[in-house]
Image (cartoon, helix red, strand yellow):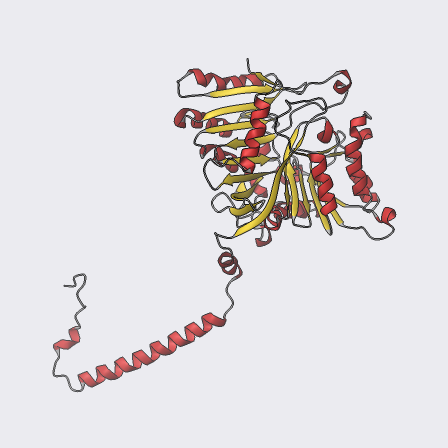
Length: 479
């Protein structure tokens, strides 16, 4: 009987006196060795010269320890009249960031957008604070051949949500009519039965980008509080974001296009929450990074869903979770009927109750806020009294308005969409209710510290912004 570690017995050896048995065995053995050697030589030679499958070569080409240079900075829009204490953190403005991207552009500019109202007349109220928006619009318009006396300086492509009577997008019609840009519109009723393109993204030369809360709206530069990120000389991360824009362009430029059951290899990403990109940020420190997208049908293979990026950021927090968003509802708000949608709500409760994570939520309040939101927020805050280890604090951020500013439609609001934890910075384009993750297109960017307790990083900068706003006179306790 065979036992581990012992040689198998050859039962032919029982016939010791068989004629020529040893000679036959030797000849057979020699032939076997010759055939085996020949096979190995042919196999190794074939492997050396035969091209590897594309996906295998791509996977081998990408090394987990590769670091990619990327200059990243936070950018903000601070509404006129909203003033902080003198020593408060201050960052580049959204207007300056967009101007810089236009200065950097040599060949291409891709813009993913919800709607366009860059001129004062677009909102039915010509206000002096519309001037920065009009500057940006005029620079885009100047790309047209009628203005530069030849072909456009750069190739501008705009993917926008389908125009409507409320948002006719006259600006993009003008840009297209003057040959300054090519424009496509995405109708999510065709793709998902409802929803919108809610992304706010600029991509320049596949090397630089802006991603954040600011719409293509003059008010987003002077009358609405916004937050985003500007990346310069960041080709690897920019090229990855460009794959998301590529999906928008495909859907918008083909009248019969539908969301495929599986996106092709061209849209695939190698970077996600399981395998992030390693960035050498500002040549000073490293961070892990990946871009997420919503809704799931628009996410190509490898892409982390935006909701999963948010949940993973909350679930990985060890000490605190600080959230700043315009709207927060554990609901599907815009469907045919109201639906409970507890995904983010449950993650917040679990973090606070099970792990003792300190949660702070800074939620906007303005003239268009629904009072029912307070009830959902109170249900979270009331958990603080359930156990001494549970701490959930909520404040409402109110942007002040004088009589003149009150006349500006849909202005004077904190439009931020970000979260910062002790480990992660998340900057997105979506409000926090279920609709924005089920049938609305948006993007998130996750940046994670590679060293605990870093005091100089984008994550730390975002924490400083949150602390500034939380401790300001514009943050009011939820009552």
